[in-house]
Amino acid sequence: MKISDIDMLIMDECHHTILKHPYNAVMEVYYTACRQDSATRLPQIIGLTASLGVGACDDDPQSHYVRICANLDCDCITYVQHEDNVRELMEFNPPPKRDQIIPVEPRSMDNEFVMEVTSLMKELMILDEMQLAVARIPHEFGTQQFENWIVQVITVIVINVVVMEVRSKQENV
Image (tube, rainbow, N blue to C red; front, side):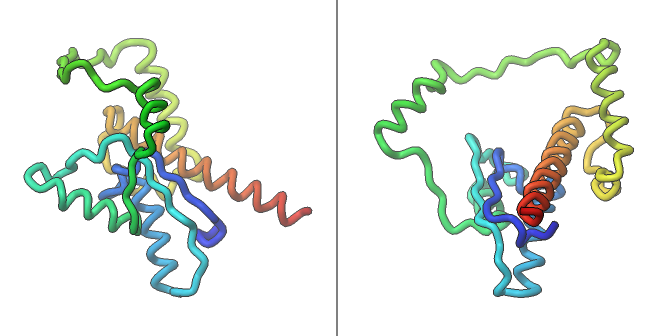
């Protein structure tokens, strides 16, 4: 599958489109295709996020936002504006009554859930589709960051498989 086979690419949590994140790897393919042939058909990219965060630019969030927009080939930033949509959004996601950070104890690595997740991650790591991604693991195995990363990698793989299946069906029609 090529990036030009995709019409629209929606990236939820697009604020992760930085460094070695799978979203950034997808965008590298996008930019490579664009550089190789400026006339190539590329997908429309829609990035969604509830919080941009500040990334590694704690002292300059604007630089972080500009970098994310550049990584996403962004030419428009928008937010919920229409009064009816704002009202609907507030029904499902009311503003917090107060901001509060509550520290929690680190989870135990000896419980059944953690052992099952670890086992599943090990199984995922040996899949053929994971071999390229595995060569560039950005986080230590078993950490929360690793879990988040592997879920994102699998999501990209699933998207690729679904697109290939749809394309195959279209070609057989």
